[in-house]
Image 1 (spheres, helix red, strand yellow):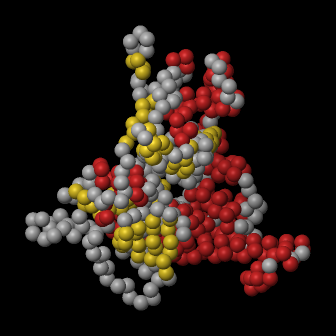
Image 2 (cartoon, helix red, strand yellow; image 1 turned 60 degrees about the horizontal axis):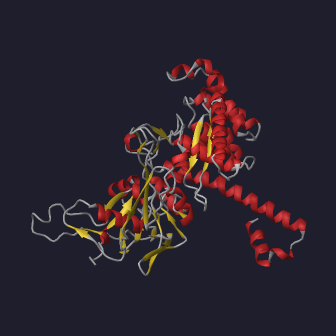
Image 3 (cartoon, helix red, strand yellow; image 1 turned 30 degrees about the vertical axis):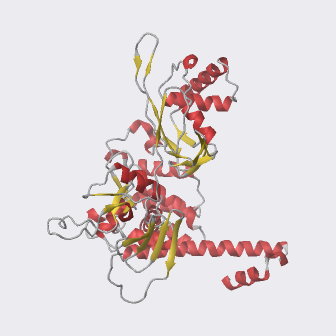
Length: 486
């Protein structure tokens, strides 16, 4: 079948008639589903080769906002060494988190949803649909026992995996009731019925920033809260219109929601200060305001945005480019959009000086001063591990060549100095990976890193992304030789 598709591609799609074209598309989809199923099987087998040394070194997901961790698959599945996910991810060209999900879904299907697993490999259920079911059964609250997961498996397999998100939620909720799992969960409310699987959430898609500087918000809230929110937004939109706003109703409702987020339900729209400012790096924050009677309203919140714009001098005037880069989300940003943010009420703007990324900076000792940290953050933008996209500002700054804490006392030259050409931004997971596993990397030029995996795969990472350099060396792994100091 693969040979047929390749032959058709070489011949050119233009020579195919409607029937042949549809047949080719169908064959292509069949190949895609077959390979996705095979990838799940291979991911599970990769996990089999990498059991953890202890439960403390097993892969898991960190729950945002708390110290709790969730396993990558449900009860009854084997544990997996946390660092093995990185090599699988880089080979596939995906993040370590995505690789962790792939392995977790494969183990969940193979061990707890075997009927669905069999359907996937028989070609009756596409892998993506089975993975959606596995994602729900893994992260159900309370957790599903092996028997409860088997019940879900039987129901889903009976309909060949053709179950939507709402039906799946109801099925899991019914399973929780059937197996009395809520009794083991002290946080569960027995009066909630099937809502033991709590659908409420508020998700702000801040990694997907529109060119206009907007983000999408998705929420599922209580009915009473939803009605109250609707009234509050309607009131806020009407107030803005009464004060002369010419924006659309949708835009005014969105602005009213932002006002609620700042707890400014009684915002004095008649006395907004108009202060605007931009810079190569702009720092915007809400500050307190003094009212006419002398009272001080506390700051509702502080939000820091890092916006970078090219600037030039025209006489004594600084001229900024029309477009720049928003560090949060790594997106383009319009100068006019930034000005509108800075012109909003009670906003403080700090303009930082330009940092010359071509000028190397160094410091004595091991500690990294702010000026060097800022240099590394601006240069690297994200974690420098292959395919990782975590913003550099929230990362550790790592010495590429390890700092020698005993060098000065023993009269030896410092092999790993604290300088910008020996530092890289690295998220906490990949920093630990580099420290405690066989991965290693070198900086071949400022901001350009070359990584070598435990199995010899090599990758180059720069500010444009990650490139696989060559296939792994089948021979023995050569010893690491640190790059000479520049």
